[in-house]
Length: 79
Image 1 (tube, rainbow, N blue to C red):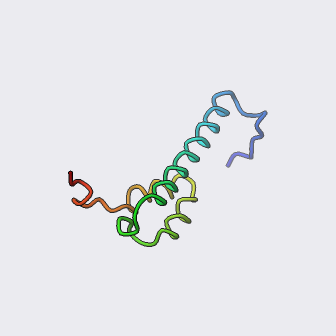
Image 2 (cartoon, rainbow, N blue to C red; image 1 turned 135 degrees about the vertical axis):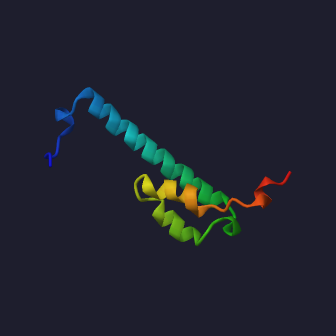
């Protein structure tokens, strides 16, 4: 296992990937939190409070909310 690298020890590409990963993680978190706030309780599987907490788990949380936490009923497809 490699030791920890400081910011100065990273190459330019590694620095960019760290920043992009952080921005992506933050964007997913904000999108999930916003979706949870705006979605009615009946359209979310489980409790909103649980999904809010889960969404703070890096990458896994927001993605799991979007894949498993929201209901995709035919009612949402009505005109």
